[in-house]
Length: 98
Ligand SMILES: [Zn+2]
Image (cartoon, protein in one colour):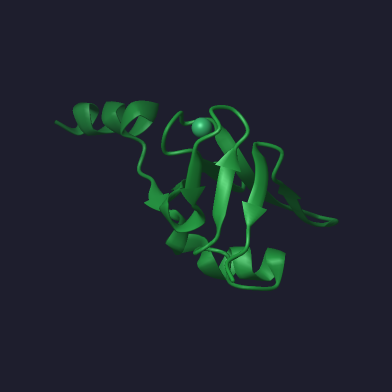
């Protein structure tokens, strides 16, 4: 039983993810405002998603945010000795609400 649980933990298919609302505070510190209600467009599949609905993976080095439609990476936040690095190259744009 113990081995089976360990195997499942290593399987990326069952990797636990949370939604974008879980990193609302982190995103606020990056953007300087609340962005979970904003829409972003995935640069890979062009799906438009509300940031709060994106899939967030926090187990790796840094935070990886993936498109709920195609699972490609749209946002990445990594803490480095020289500061926080934010990579949004997987998103074509963010749309601020009115
Ligand atoms: Zn996508």
